[in-house]
Length: 594
Image (cartoon, rainbow, N blue to C red; front, side, top):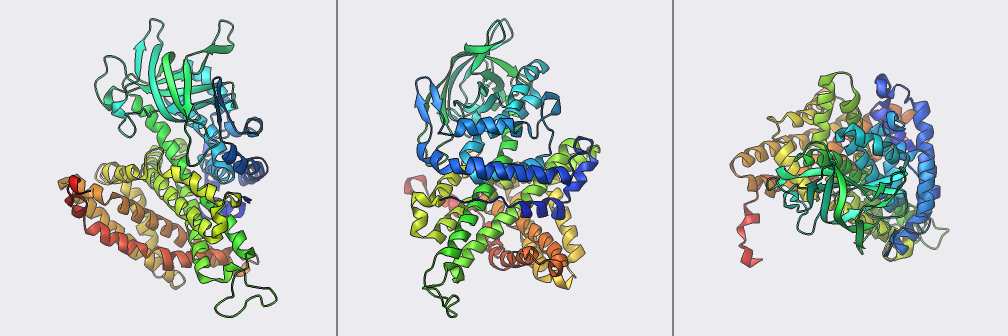
């Protein structure tokens, strides 16, 4: 049985005590988004997630989607849940009020996304893809296309997808073969096949709007010849009714390891009518805008599953009686002690807790800067915020999903044999989380993006948006005796990160292969330092409030932060040693010797 209670208290701490989300109300776009509004919104999202979505998670995994000649049917209860989701206004949450949206901040929406993913990741995929399509159209489509589709995406009557991958074309999108032929009426005929299309077909909405990468006959080879098109599943008839098939066909659905209630489709476009989005041959601009936001959302998926696994494992550890404490029976009136008394079980639970709460804190910082990058009136402040988001996106996507997978596996380990069987629900979290490390750009690709694009950009301009505030924080607090046990390990890890950054930057100039060989270790080191920064700031706040707190919330923060610094952050030493050793050994073995 799966359990989940939305961590509202910790979300409030991160939003209002750590990052001061009240500052957003100074922006014209969010002047009404006070805490009096946000707290009920989070409570409503928690209620919907726990009461509507969570009961469908295990059954959805068992049933999966049903592929028929007439299309894809979602698991039992999904269609009704989606209707409730739309009626509750959740599809409109962070969309432009001009098209019926609520205009809520990304930083609040990320908390809602986390809850949806904890309760039912497969369900969350459908509106998540639609939101990505909405943002791409909102940023790059013509006004005519916006007027036609955005309101429908906002109210949920239309859903959206992004169609990138082809059988021969995954990461290397320059190999795309889907053809777009210009027609006299200004539209294009789109012909080709796409695979691994999440939410490519389903029965939740009236129509599905596909954003498709394709190339025109005269396009140059490679990625510079790619254009982006909007291709609806259904077209309007002469009366404006959406009912004419556009020869957009799901030919099969994948039988997957996880997220089984999310339809992953192979799609065929047969001279389907589409319209250009943005400029011809500049389709990657729009698609990357959609993908970058999606990568932040995938990070929330890893975080959400980590939280769900932590809660399930903690509940089990408090109830499961096995053995006695090595220090003597803790519950002598029972046949055995609960397994939470055992050090190794506590190690696993504290690791999950430290990862989850640290990622929530860092993710909230990134999403708040996303809000500033789009809405702050000062151009310099917007640019600085955007630089930080650009730097952080591959870290959020990769780190959160890697740690999410580690956490779900630890959760299953806490349950032992019971975790390995389906009824517990833990093994589903493991299977669901595994894809998050793969789609929207594998985590190895995220690491290459970090060292190849973000690190060297304009002589380290992106990097300064993280390094400078971290250095200032260390200098301001290094002499505080109360913070010494937290600040000193952070300072040492940050020094390693700085030296590793210089090493990789130098290697990248002379031998990019050497830099690429240590990219994954570098991203993990960067991520561990980022979480350490968050834990220092969180414990600093908690230390000022712990004496007046009877709930134990702040005391638990301090203990968890201490665990992170003593038991997790030391991984930075091994990562640093591996990075400084270089990557020559990776390339030394001949291909024939593998």
